[in-house]
Every structure is written in C-alpha cells, then in structure tokens.
Amino acid sequence: MRVRFSARDDAWSEWAPALRAACPEMHLDRDGDPATFDAIIYAPGGDITDFAPYANVRLVQSLWAGVERIVGNATLTQPLARMVDPGLRQGMAEYCAGWAMRAHLGMDRYAQDGIWRNGQIPPLAAERPVTVLGMGELGQAAAAMLTALGFPVTGVSASGRAVPGVSVLPIAQLDQALARAQILVCLLPDTPATRGLLDADRLSRLPDGAWLINPGRGTLIDDEALLRGLDRGRPGHAVLDVFRTEPLPGDHPFWAHPAVTVTPHIAAETRPATAAPVVAQNLRRAMVGRPLLHLVDRDRGY
Image (tube, rainbow, N blue to C red; front, side, top):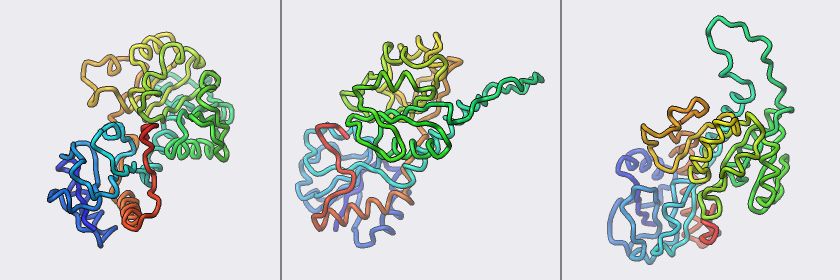
C-alpha cells in the first residue's frame, strides 16, 4: 500500500521510523501523484488542504485525537479516523489524576515559610466528588483512574450511555453534575454544541472553591466568564492546558491570575511508539474493507 504523510516537517523524522516498523508493507512518502495513494496520515500543519485529488484514498488517519481542524473541510470525503492509542489515554488519565490529587490534597497550601499548618487536613478521596465532562475514550480513561484512587466519579456525555464503575448523566443534566463537582475535569471535543458551554451561568453552579481542570478544548469555556467566576470563588482554581489561541499570548489575563495554573498543551501527547501500531492496524483494515477504528462521525464532529 502507498501512504502519504502530511504533517509538520519536524514530525517526519520522529514518525517515519515508527510507522515503517509497525507497518513494513507500507510504502510511506511525503509527496507524489495523488492518484497513486491508498491512504493519508495527517496532522495539522501538513501540506494537504485539498483532498479531492486523492480519489483512491480509503482512509485519512489523523495523528491527533481532535479533528476539528479537518472535519469541516468540504474536500474531505474519504473516511476520517481520529487517533486514540494507549499512550494518549494513559497520558491524559495521568494528567487528570495528578491535578485532581493536587487539588484534593491542597498541596499548594503548604508554603515553605516556617508556618506549621497541621490543622488543614484534607478529606479522603471518597468524600471528594469528581465530575468528568465528556465520556469518550479519554474521559473513560480519566474516570477509571480517578475511580481507582477512590473518588466518586460522575460522568457526563451526550448520550448518557452507561460506563462500568461510573455514574453517567446525559448532557441534559449538566447543571446537576456541576453542582456536585468539587473537582470538574473537562474532556469534551470541540463542536458547535460544546463551544462556550461553560458560560457564566454554568460556572456559577459549581460549589464554592471547586477546581476546574481543562485538558480538553479551550473553546469549551467562556474566558471572561471564567475570570469573573474565579474572582468570586466559583471555581476556586482553574488548571488550563488548552486555549482558544495557542500559544497563549503572554499578556493574557490567565498568566497573571492567582487562581489559574497554565500548562502549555502537554496533557496528552500522541507518542509514535504507542500510536504507530494503531495506525498500522487501521491501514490494514482499510485495505481489506474491514470496519475502521475510531471513525469520525462528520455530523457530530468527532
């Protein structure tokens, strides 16, 4: 099979060896006659913007979990699959669990300033309700790790479909889920239905002092409403890994706000070592007409 690699120039040296090792029967190229390719491996920053000439392509495999930058491309009529791999799931779960534990244990209270604060004892995890907003592959991975740590976890999804070990509510009951969330983890995709979902009204429904952790999509939250809410203590702190503009401009108010922790979009990286086997499996499925893994629903946008 002949496969076109379309991603940033610096990705080639990192990805090509892993992809070739995982799928040695693949002939991987960075350019060539569009009519000769069977599949495309894609990431934002690649040189393909018009997919129409690639009429024989049976799969466009994204290297990113988010597909909002490509799913609306009118020229893309080929099957599109997003990336979900073990390393991505594990990395996201670890990020969410790590920051949830920091919030839960109040680690930032213990300044090294000579003051003995032994009266500030956290509750047990079982007494700290967590809501995970978005119960796709990454949300389920985060919920499973948080549950294993002892937190009572409520999930929220568009369907409300059951997930083992987690109480799941449909998005219609979002306000109820927010009201119980001492820690809110946001892992929804970027779609028209989710943009600005956490506005001033919804943020005000969080308990006083709640922590908000957003490694999902920056478009989910109304930035101005979040800053006003932080000033009132709802939420009490926000850990933000994703933003409407990235890199986050140096003069953005998030950098200076004492109740905001900015991390530079590092929650869950797609790692070639764990992702290349997933790409190889999907390529082989596409070549023999088997159902594709993580196929994107164009209407839903993910």
